[in-house]
Length: 245
Image (cartoon, rainbow, N blue to C red; front, side, top):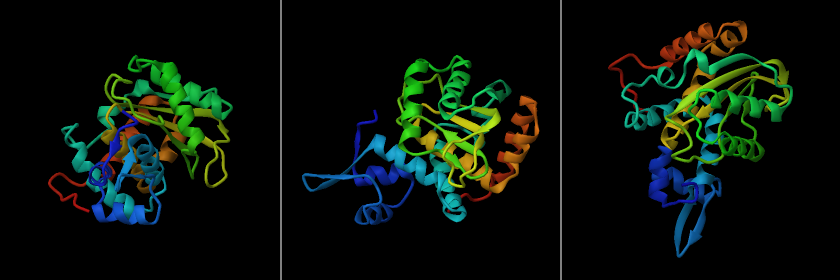
């Protein structure tokens, strides 16, 4: 429910950050909030959008710490720390999208997600992804973007999954480095905790492995799938190692 209101304690738990951190963000007016009856409240839809953009722009050390905390929360949904085998399949990857504009990229990526048969209302999902992109670009430096819906609905998908698309030609996508974008990830998660954790995991793969170059280098979705799986293994701690941040 995107219009649900969080208390300050609930938003700290939801975002995997300390209560003191949330209080500092509120004092600096760096997080969307409102005061009602002397209480500080946070709208979930606004927090989702704010958190997604914050994760995309996190520096390495803060991303590491956030990812470690969100991994613990994700274990309530997935038994294993590795997300990519749960979310991705070779058939969810298209390395030859014909899209030539931002609008057509979003349409083609939503169509790729719909081809899985796991999107209950593709038209509604398309509208939400478009609204999210209008709110703030999801493109990152290096030629990629992490597309997702503006708000999360529990009955939008059959389970959580991820699709990857690469356009034949690079497309202007408002990336912070000013360069066009050619590689697109569309995150389709029914659980908001998994959405934010998946976003953090993908950012970690992009920053700490060579997976982007590998995805640009291959024409074979099966090879692309194995590259993502291997990259995730490379950033996960060894079994039994501490993930505390």
